[in-house]
View (cartoon, protein in one colour):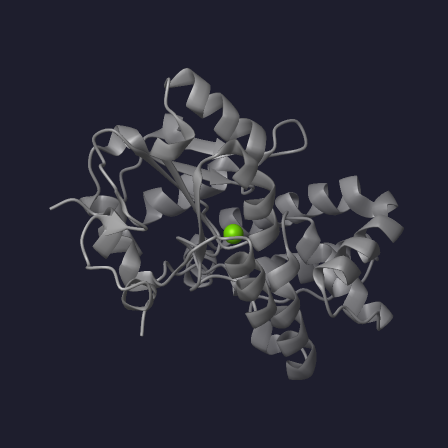
Amino acid sequence: MNWLSRQNLKPGKSYGGKMFNPQTDMLALDFDGVILDSIEECLVVGYNALAIQQNRPERIERLAEIDQGLAAEARRQRNFIRHGQDFVYIHLALRQGFTIRSQQDFDHFLEENEIFQADFRMLFYRERARFIKEDLSGWMKLNPFYPGVQQFLEGYHPKSRLLIITSKLKENIQTIFQARSVYFPDGNIYSANQKASKFQIIEKVLDKNHINGENFHFIEDQVDTLIRIKPLGINCYLAGWGYNNAEQVNRARNAGIPILYLPDLAKIFLTD
Ligand SMILES: [Mg+2]
């Protein structure tokens, strides 16, 4: 049973009693865990970045090259990620045998090791840039779109009212779209960083477009980010197909944030 049937809603542009109108509303999508299933690429790059930081010579090109117990644990901890450098922290925690069970544990670990943050961020993006430069097709293989999402992006109109709001570098997204021949306006890709959070970006977009929160829709797979953004009065949705566990899905439900599943994307937001 999908979200629509659970909510007793008819497929179409209707949800929660309000109609979605792509002519007057804006839709914003997070990138990793909503559009792109990038878990393997991020964990591979994070692994290599930590090896560089620790002066170890080993490099990997697939997650299958590391101990499978560790790889499974790294995949589980993906649910707590917010930024690129966090993937390096996952591997640091695994090497140190530090147990991470919750978002709180993960955030505590980041705080304790804050001294590495700038270095990890620099090494993560530098290692990714090297990977792209030396083996674009190998890199692309680790970065599949979720099923049907490319068709969704291509079929959505008007394109001017479709945004991406992500913590990924804009140039990484452009590389992926270019490699798959997806047209997406550069000006509609917003990258959050230390200077501008997703909250601040959305605040600015609302202001710039003279649009009310109720006409703005944001799909994201990180529940904490959604809970932080909700006070803006926009429509928040948790991408149930992305990186979240049962506890996080429950937290979204308790915060009144609807859970979407992949087929809902086209059913609710795609125009005919
Ligand atoms: Mg995400």
